[in-house]
Structures are given as structure tokens and as C-alpha cells.
Image 1 (cartoon, rainbow, N blue to C red):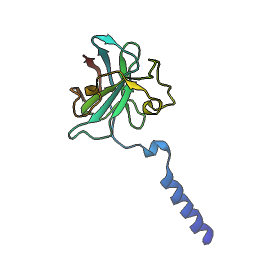
Image 2: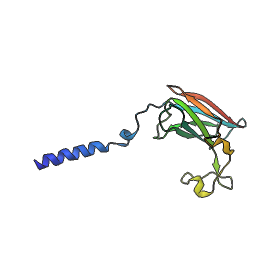
Image 3: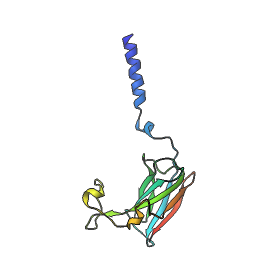
Image 4: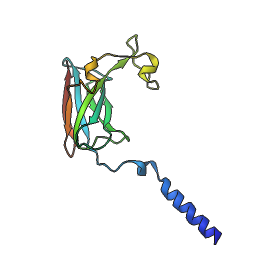
Length: 146
């Protein structure tokens, strides 16, 4: 009897642990792509951050521009895209004081990195940029930071 109770308790405990996949929230995400330019020119390494606004569910997401200025937003749990809804969009472009790239293993604040973009673009209260992500996603978002 003790063995059966022990085995049953162990199964219940293991079922509660689950895999990383089971730990994700159940919100459906939609692919979200776009382009960022600075005064009309693409810049690599700009971090694009989507914060949900209003009734939009979820935690938002982030992505980084490539050499052509294109980015893809990843949800906070690593999936490609974000839930449909409205987002405030922020931008950061940190570089080392000598202008070199911040090492991937470092946090910008820990190594004295400097944001190359005006503060208004990285501040939730002053960023003028917004995005709407429809069900099914979008690939035509364009942001020109002037």
C-alpha cells in the first residue's frame, strides 16, 4: 500500500513540473516584422521593444535590427511574434564608449555602454512610436527615427 501511495505521489509531483514548453503562456502570437531607419538609413544593432498598451494581453517582445534595418520581434518566451493588439514601441542602440559593439554576454549598463539614440525614443512616456499587430501578424512596420 505504501508503495502505491508513494508512486502515485511521485507521478503527481512529476506531472506538475512539466517541460519548458508547458511553462509558456497560452497566448497566440503573430509574426511581427519591420524595418527601422535613422534619418532614412538602415542601422544594424538597434533594439526594438514592443510594450503592450490598453487591452493588449501578454508581456510584449523585442528584436534587433540587421544590416538592412530589418527586425523580427520575439515574444518574451522566445516565440516569433507577439499577441495581436496595440503596442508602444521603444528603440535603443547601445555601443561601447569607443563605438564598438557591446559584447553579447554583457549588459550595456555594466560596461559603460552609451545609447546612440535620443532619449525620447527609449522612454515610454516620450516615444512617439506605436504599432498595431493584427491577427496573423504583420511584416510591413516601418519606423524612421529622425
